[in-house]
Length: 241
Figure 1 (cartoon, rainbow, N blue to C red):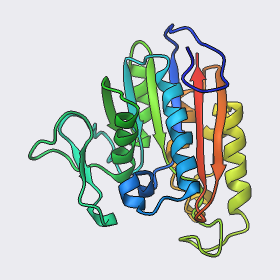
Figure 2 (figure 1 turned 30 degrees about the horizontal axis):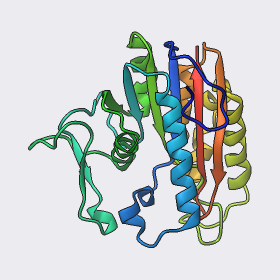
Figure 3 (figure 1 turned 90 degrees about the vertical axis):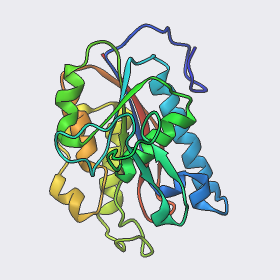
């Protein structure tokens, strides 16, 4: 059965690639947020729905993609990160148990692992950077899940981290449209320079997903497109054959 309310039941037959697109703000973790906010609770639910939809097809491995990972690095068992920089004394492993000498996780991979844990996923997971995602996904046999972590523009309001830029909302709207339509080509050709100017952290990851699935038929569903704190939070899931 489907893990997303309102979506018709789906058989558990392997598909090529399923993707969950989620942002990576630290406040996804309730202990970081502190006092609950309705906007954050709604974002958390949207991410949970997208991850559940990705996992509904029982991928043999989930690849967590996010910025901050050097080219060629693979995060796995024993690697860990923490949220001490956000006022919470919490260390989380990417998979398995934290081991001495393990690699330190970028925030995107730390929160991606947290989302998978929250979803109850206990299967194989690997963390990569955007540069490595297309080739790595194509090298994997069987059903593959991708958890693509990244935000839209951080210039959506005067209180945003990068202040207001009139181009920020149209930029995020175009990404949201591509996510909802399952348009891999549109993601693959996002303007990287404009994304950097608009402080859109997700652009390298979105471009990588688009490149990885450029030769596939994709069905997309947009779960959320909001900017409650001046940063674009886009949540979606894709099924690609």
